[in-house]
Length: 444
Ligand code: PLP
View 1 (cartoon, rainbow, N blue to C red):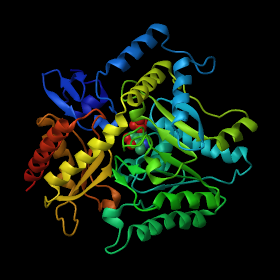
View 2 (view 1 turned 30 degrees about the vertical axis):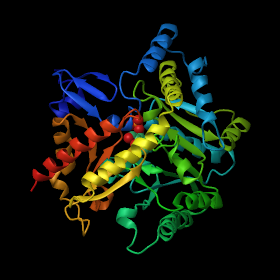
View 3 (view 1 turned 180 degrees about the vertical axis):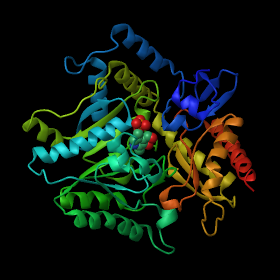
View 4 (view 1 turned 135 degrees about the vertical axis):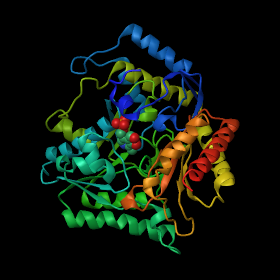
């Protein structure tokens, strides 16, 4: 075992993953795990899908790399066409990158350049939400609202401003309707824009269903419709970060379809390539593209590996497979089944505060006291215990600690591959319930 590999050296013991088939991953010691979180909501087709492997072999035989400054390639063109064909209204161009953080960085820079091109250089503020994760590069980290990740890098972060998320379980008042709460939560955006100066804000960025920081938190009521209206009222661009919740994870190809809105810029990654290659993308509206095309004539950005043919071939094969096998219908059906079984098995547990999410993107928030929603003491690291107990039982889930200002409890995120069946869901829920019980027993 190498101790030179940083993440390995820091984690200490880590099993060596040596193979995978369908929803299962295998380690070098012969252990078999159900990958019920697709890593971090990545492996949407599961492991070893023959159609994707075949497409990658063929692409590798033809061409592994060509620089986008000199050439275009067939897989990149085809992937862009596929993404635009299925995109929310108005998003008609695609910028291919290598992952989620790169996509967010590019989207933020596109938003800023749009205002430079259209003679509004005073616009310089980004607004985001406290309960959010947008990536770990400096621009994306600045946008994210996770204090734990941000604190030590604070002096290096660009000017971003944070409002509250739309988080019904913790922030909706007793007796308050969804509509009233949605309006109250969205109003924070308008207030913040007016505070900063209506002509000084570049963009608002949000995850339609919050992933890593919160455990699959969708908005309620017409929150995002109101957000869209507020952005339009002040000429602020709306960036939706669908890196985790997008590409079918919630049952529609894009999560924002269920909110009935389209953004000006959208970031996708993770499920785009399903883990077969590192790939991400920004989808941008014609308005932004036109500003570049009629202005300076280019987007001032670029990465050596953008539009990589192998990455594009993976994205294309994964997305074509999802279409060919009508897997979104399975995401809806098995998502409902997963929710049903989670509620049946854990709904009355005194430490399960909330079960939430959409499609095959579900979160469970754990609390010390269900009546008061009091979280467990963060020092107990319940989430880490649950992760360990789940691994012992051959289950990969994605647990995280509480974040928003210390008031949110530990949560577990489930994001199984789109190919799961009822029996798989049963095994996942069974093992998860045992792991949660063992994790909580360990601290009491
Ligand atoms: N945006 C969201 C919503 C994410 O969940 C993540 C990763 O978890 C990112 C951006 C960053 O993506 P990556 O880790 O591929 O850089």
